[in-house]
Picture (cartoon, rainbow, N blue to C red):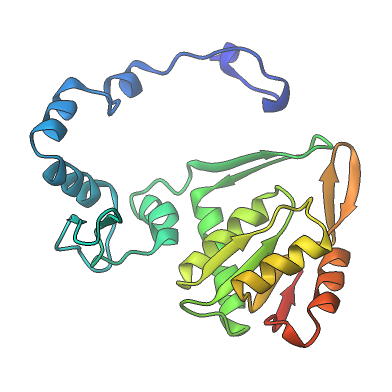
Amino acid sequence: MADYEIESLLSEERRFPPPASIAEGSIARPDLYEQAREDRLAFWGDRAREYVTWTKPFTEVLDWSGAPVAKWFADGELNVAANCLDRHVDAGLGDRIAIRWEGEPGDVRTITYAELTADVRRAANALHALGVGQGDRVAIYLPVVPEAVVAMLAVARLGAVHSVVFGGFSAQSLHDRILDAGAKLVITADGGYRRGKVFPLKAAVDEALVLLGDRSPVEHVLV
């Protein structure tokens, strides 16, 4: 096992074969292909029931009445955050690693499913207190940090919609995306690292809000 210890993912070049148990449990099995070939709708319906937790079970796998637009599981309802996090914690997997993150300066953070779930719940409560609810749009203007994942899942937990804006975009580009999405809240940070330099984010948000002026749908900025 010592040979499998990884100090830094950014500089790791070795290859590790998957354990036999994972290889044997791969979804790429001839019997599954045969099931899908014989009855594709029943196959995908079974997979959706097996791997997804539904708050309202679907009654129809595929609605093709508006072809060429396909609607899958259209009358079903689910919570993305609960499927990404809660169901794994409920299954006793809370101590498993959900995120292992390495920053540009070399800092490392390891976050378990239980820890990530707790962070997402706290963030969702904060967003709810700021008036974010089902159907609202939230712009996320963050560097590539674990908090970006927390933000996306917290928004999803409330039934709201997130719009991720690349941290390298200008204030004008951020302005355009906030306006297009009708975002009522922006989540950002003071800045982040890119190519060895610190780049500002909050300053770009401030500039974008000035450009928006009276047209701004933004009610709050969360830093």
